[in-house]
Length: 332
Ligand SMILES: Nc1ncnc2c1ncn2[C@@H]1O[C@H](COP(=O)(O)OP(=O)(O)OP(=O)(O)O)[C@@H](O)[C@H]1O
Image 1 (tube, rainbow, N blue to C red):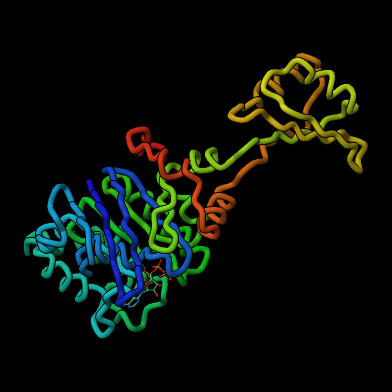
Image 2 (cartoon, rainbow, N blue to C red):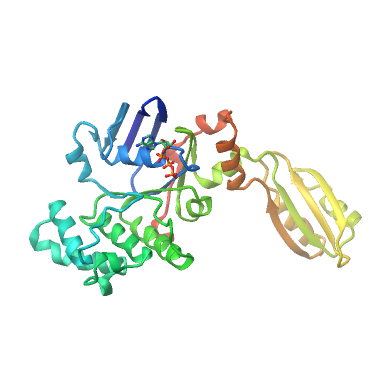
């Protein structure tokens, strides 16, 4: 487990990290999300022992990384924003060099490097010079050096920056695979990326933690009233009649669309999820629904709200519930 306590980093007078407090539990994928300049890389560099803090503590399994960086570093594999690659080495030479630095026993080295090369799909380029590799392959070599030694925690700073869509999908698949055995923390300013792979999101803005929860809870917390949109062949008055006694509904708007169908927006009371009841009411009236979908707050709305406004809704800070999150690795 990682505990970040009251972390502060000043560059001169500029406060890049502003009293951060959070915990990272084992076996999950955490997303560190924030706009450019929010302080993600600075925080990750401190968490991995590459940068000192102005104030605060980072405990890795109880060991203070700022006081015992070498000990704590053994638990962490890190892919910084600029991977530390020696471009005049071949992939294999470089990974052998990293394995030696990490103190991996000589007898285990060859086997482990081959295993990781296969895992991140760089085995076929192991004899190529790194400088001749594409950005996507270089990123995978960076990832391989982070995974070497199979540390419990793998920290990836913007792992898919500069990759094409196919490579992004491959990296995401790999991250999901890694999460079966490791705790993974990745940073990104791309919401979709974090939404796609992470179980838990920490949103950081101007050096401050402004929210931390599961993607679903973040959406729920900001969502005032969610709504359901339906399409049906019934007339607007029939729709209202069918929904008359369905609990949890605040308002209904209807209109006839271009195909002569009724489109209705059903606003739910706060905290209600009336989808199933709406479906059953139409089924009981033997009136087929052609569409039924929810509309409401998206994670994008949450992100924009939190990172663009100066005031942060109280709920996002106080509702941090680490214990409630669970992830079934078998789903991946
Ligand atoms: N070495 C440095 N000296 C001075 N200021 C710095 C230094 N490194 C970062 N900063 C500033 O600290 C703030 C946080 O930077 P950081 O790189 O941690 O943000 P980030 O969230 O990782 O952004 P990005 O997504 O653009 O990498 C920014 O305002 C940045 O300009």
